[in-house]
Image 1 (tube, rainbow, N blue to C red):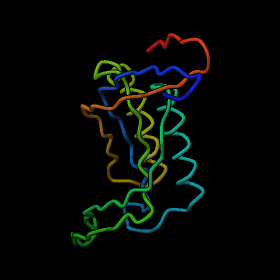
Image 2: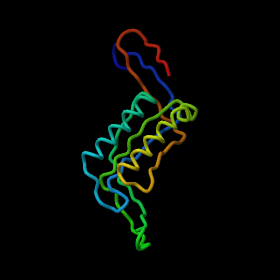
Image 3: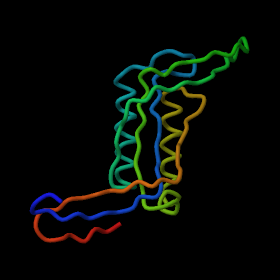
Image 4: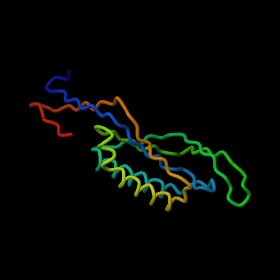
Length: 140
């Protein structure tokens, strides 16, 4: 243990993540400023809901059908970012799911997406917090 610090552990049993797309539904690369704006919006919402969020570069792939020709294409999302967070349990996620879905709807519209994935699943994550001096009581 680190000298002068006490460890407080919280089990975070549910992981929540939202990919921020790199391309629109036509396969065109989205402007960096728009992608960053949505990354910050999603990160801010997940932080408000669950106490923190981390963006992670994440190569994504999608199968997209051209609406006019019916041709199916495979798209590489080279610059996709996955904004992830964790919460106490499924009930904590469900309490905020409506807000997350509303933001996903807005992002889909603004970034011209055919779909937005919200990942939410069981996890064995643990948050370890360190406080100087007296032991803090963590409210979760």
